Amino acid sequence: MKTYEEMEYSNVSLRFEYTQIQRLIEELVQAGLSVSWKETRKFYTLSVQTSWTTQRLNFNKYGKIYRLRKRNYNIKDQRFANILHRFIQEVKGHAVLKFFSNGQLVVQNIRYGEPVKITQIEGSSKKVLFEKECTVSMEEVILAFERDDAEVRIPVLRLELDYVLAQLFEALNEDDEKMIDSCKETIERLRQEMVMLEI
Image (cartoon, rainbow, N blue to C red; front, side, top):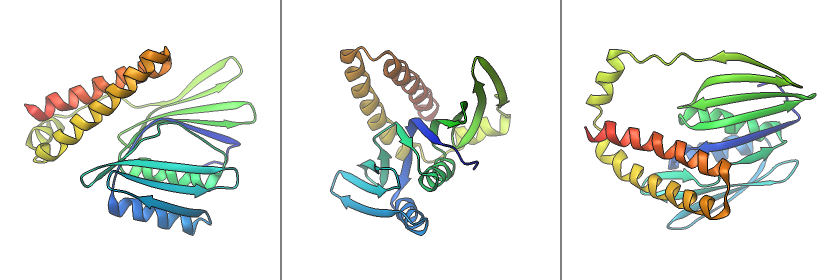
């Protein structure tokens, strides 16, 4: 990854298994970052001391799944940014990444671990560098119907929906239009996945 002055990770949605959290800790330590953690019955918290600040990764535990609670991060430590970016790809997570450097902004929209759109903004000019075509093959549709993990995924989806609905409730009370739109988008995505799994 190119070096940037500052990185902003927003609308981050990640689900980890326990072994992936352990590997995340190992990679952070190998990169020279100081890491401490705390685990309870319902939560898992990583505190990562970067050269700029302490970043906290708070996870809710849903059985064997660990869901990242905080959705927005401002990062100035390249090591931490690279590792977080790699894990977003590995666990097929979602995020909007904004990279700032020399008055230039690059925005990456990531869905299921892959960039779907990359936009470069400099001053008043805006240029789309990459946009993934939305193509779904018949084989992918058949595979989706043949998935046997629906019994595991549906309860997790319900918990995710409850969490996002609680976020939406807070956003509505605070008149946070940006968060309201983000929650509505997430709810629609989760609803579509639920419909596919329940067929």
